[in-house]
Image (tube, rainbow, N blue to C red; front, side, top):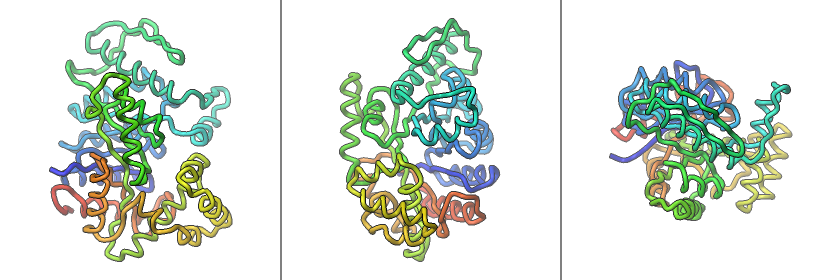
Length: 352
């Protein structure tokens, strides 16, 4: 069966998200990744575990600045147990602006955005150490440069022999190298097709450094998809999506600028800040949009996903965008459009 995953964002109620996950389960999607910004991922995925039977349930991703490794181990083990072992722990470093935005509401608990990859590495090591100790019913101690666990006896629901896969969400080569060393997979949210080879090579470098087979690392990628018989309407929605990401955070601005689009990033930002989002969207050249997203009829979208597979992406992650998309704000169109994308591209055939 063709491997295909699903990535779900905000803009829907919790019940609508759960219904989308049920639909994806029936349609043969391998994994669903849910973001952390909108609702507690672990509570939501625990609810989805009771409503599904086949699909893997993944955080897409949890930023390592908001939970300690012990709390992550507890949350991951809980959803793994509720789902019968169908849980995937997606971890990432986020970026300075999003961390500051969330953490500034708690000034008594400052959490500087520093040594992000070291923090990610130690989080993985500590989570795995806690899980291994829980399986053996033993105390665990871990000492890194950032985290320290002292003589902790984890009473968490870890089944003997059940290993929780860990995927990284990163679109920088250093993150892919670290995935090659430590992770079971990597799933960036935006990845231009021309860069896939270069980033897969980073996985190989990391795997070589750790003495691993790079084939052990699953290469995934979020692919924004808008399914609509009106190709131009679908493409306009995707233009709005790219314009949003290109203008919202300096993190993304720098990333697009490093791909040779510095002048475009500056102009798009000016237009968005001036309230001219439609003009910003229409300014984007076709090749920029087509390199990171697919849109049009279901057949056109499936062909676009195949281009990602041909480039070396083993697990494309369908990221549904509805035809009227202009922002991530809640909209009744979001649930309708998301269900349409899920049903239209389902690996087991169109479903409803």
